[in-house]
Image (cartoon, rainbow, N blue to C red; front, side, top):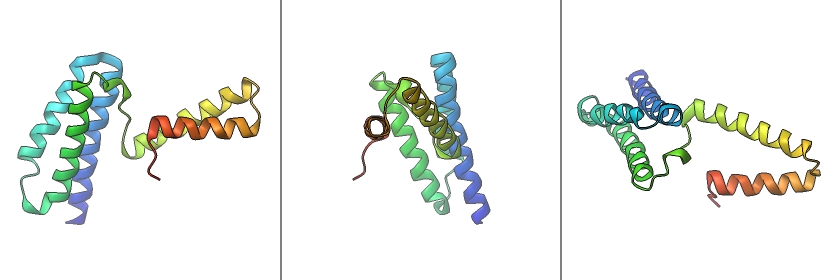
Length: 124
């Protein structure tokens, strides 16, 4: 049963990440993934034992909905392993650009902290 739960989360993440990725490249047509995720909540996560998956999927739907309403879909970030991979690549590229621009270590650390707070929030 735990394996099924893992697969449910993977499919939820897949749909969300496809929405974000496709929206970045093709725009509004990517909304089909949003619709599929919404239908998956209703049809594929209808069992009581899938409560955690359903809540997570609903959270992602709410994030998408808020971004669409506020015209901020370009600010959505990938979730899960894909999100971590993209985050690492973005940060490595950012740090490399700062070094090329001639910033010292202290300035780079300050700019990294600022970027993290602005782009990924501050849970402190």
